[in-house]
Image (cartoon, rainbow, N blue to C red; front, side, top):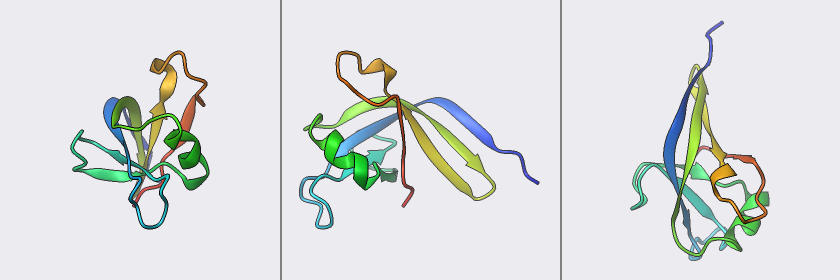
Length: 94
């Protein structure tokens, strides 16, 4: 069995996509502020909530976690003080 791996302290960008044809609350998660290196979306159940908080791209630290060919991102929202935010959300890979 292959052990998993992690890389902490990675900066990700949350980019609202109000013109997304599938979900006007979509929040794209990228590795660059310009939307390149798209890694996934905030899950639909949480996207509506997040969309109410951010209207422009924001940066946030996270951890990449993986095992074999599967990987994901855990966002750490502790640094967004002052807002009532969940501590972590899993990202759905493309």
